[in-house]
Image 1 (cartoon, helix red, strand yellow):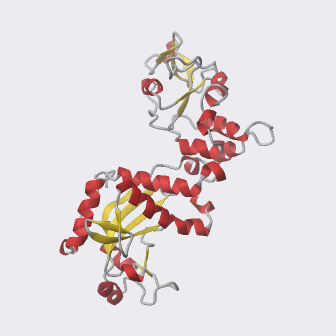
Image 2 (cartoon, rainbow, N blue to C red):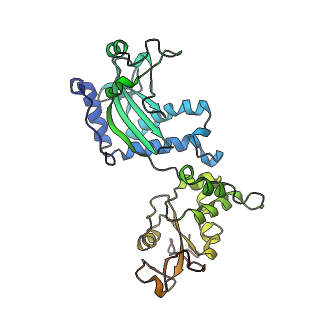
Amino acid sequence: MSLFEHPGPAPGVYDDPELMLVRQHLLALDPDGKRFARILRDTIDQLLDGEHTGRFDWNELHKTEKTHAGTLVEINLLREFELASGTDLDYLIAGIEVDCKFSQKLYGWMIPPEALDEICLVVWADDHQSLWSAGLLRASRAKLTTSGTITKKGNRDGKFRLTKEHYSLVTWLWHKEPLEENLLLHIDKTTQEAILNAGAGSGRSPGQAKLNELFRRVQRRRVNRTVVRTLAQQKDYMKRVRYNGGSRNNLRDEGILICGDYPNHQVVASQLKLPVPQEGESVSIRVAEAKPHHDGQPRILLEGRYWVAAGPHDPVERAPLLPQTKKKASTPD
C-alpha cells in the first residue's frame, strides 16, 4: 500500500453506522495520516527523553515507561485533534464514546471490560521497524466472547486480547505506514558506536564531540533536532550545530558543510542534489572546489568559487562559509 493510502472498512463494518461515523470523522481531521504519524514519532521521542537520558532505543525504556506510552498516545492525540473527552471512555468522537488503545506489538492491544461493546481506536507503532498503524475495532461482547477473539478468562487485571483468528475485525485507517526514522537506532553499529564514544576521556565536551562525529560520518542524510538533542544533552542543543564553536565551525577544516533549515541553506542543499533539510533538520556533506574532472556534477557558488560534493579521491580542503542567515549578523549561524 502506498504512503498514507488508507484501506477500506473491514467486512461487515458497513452494518456499524457508529464505527463508520467515527472513521469518517478521523479521516476528515487527518486525510493523509501525517498528523497521526507525527504525534506517534513525537510521543516515542517524549518517552525516550534523549535530552536528559541520552536514550534512543525503545528497549532501553523501563517497564513502567512502556506502560505509560498508552496514556501519552491517548493524551497527545486528544490535544492534536482537539477531541472531547468521553464520559466513560477516552474520547467523544461525532457524539460516540471511543476508547484509545496503544501497543508496541501489532494486535497486542488489551481491551478492558468497560470497552466491550464499544468502539476502540487501536494504535500501533514500532520504532525498530519504522512502521505504524491505526484502526477501529468494535469490541463486541457477544462476538468476542463466543468466537474466542479474546481469551474467556482474560489476564489477571481483567483485560482481554484479540486472537489471530479475528485480526480482520480491525478496520484500518492506516496500516503499516512509514514512521519517521530514528536515525541513531538505524545507522550501522560501527558508526553508532563511533558517534557515542566520540570524545571519551579527551576532556572535551562529549556532546560536541558526538555531534562532530555524527556529521562527519552520517552525510547526505537528514538529521533532526531530536538526534541533536540526544547527543548534545544540553538546553541550547542547536548551538552545538552552528558556527561560533559548533560543528559547522569545527568541521570546516575537513571540508564539511552542514546545511540547516534556513531558506538559503536549503538552496545550497538543493543545488548540490542533497536531501533538503526541513524544519529542525540538518544535512552534512564534504565539498571540494570544482575542477575539470567534476564536469557535469551539481555545484554551488560560495565565496566566489564553485563547489561540488567531494568524491573519495578529492583532497580535503577548507569548506566555504554558508550564506548568512541574518541580514545584520556579523558571523553566519
